[in-house]
Picture 1: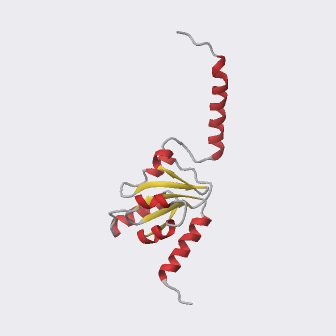
Picture 2: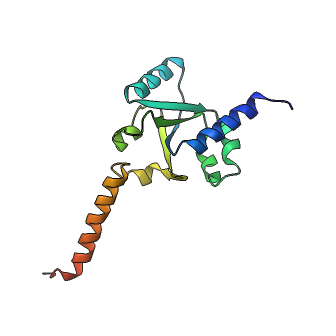
Picture 3: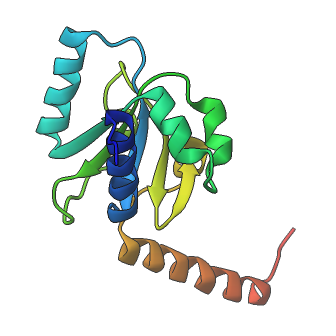
Length: 151
């Protein structure tokens, strides 16, 4: 059996994709080595890890998956960014605008891919906080028909 580097990298990317439940997808265009070092320093300061994957490999990874439409927005190397520890409480909007050299494409959470426009309406990724907000919203909606509407 003949092993090639491309096959190894593809297998590694598939394993990473399956094992990591949440990660951000960033487009890494127009970065040279000096700029990339600054970006990696920002990752380290925010306690984030990254996995850089190149264009052709990511297209091969997504061509037979439910994320086929993501191929349209892939036009350079891509970086998957994830938290070092699960207890990391980082502002979602701050993470999307982490560095001006890289741009956020989306978020993979529980086998679903969310775009940046969908993430703009969410303030945090903490599940309990989101459930509390949803509960408050339901209480307001239930009480709404009982309010008197004045002109």
